[in-house]
Amino acid sequence: MGTAYKILKSFSLGREEIYILRGTLFDEFGVYKKGTWIRSPHMSSHNPYTTNDGALIFVKTGHIHE
Image (tube, rainbow, N blue to C red; front, side, top):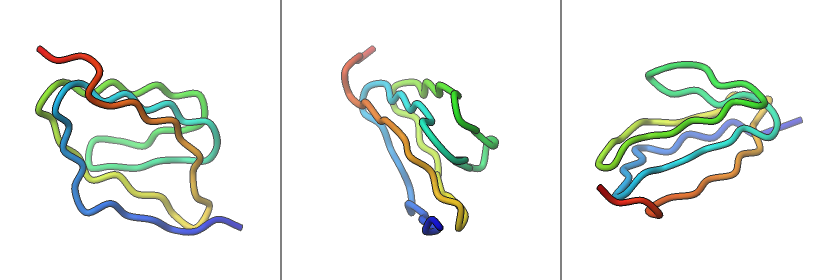
C-alpha cells in the first residue's frame, strides 16, 4: 500500500526530467504511468502528486540550462 503525496509547487531552474519507475504520477497537465519519461523546460512549474497507490520516480534537475 502506498501513500498519497502532493508537492505544493515544483519550479525548475534548468530542465527537469522525471522517469516513472512504478505507480502513477499526476499533475495539472496529465497522468504519467510506469515507463513514462517527462521532460520539463527551463523555468517551468507544475504541481505533481500521487494517489494512495503511490509512485517511485527518478528525478534529475538543473543539469541543462538554456
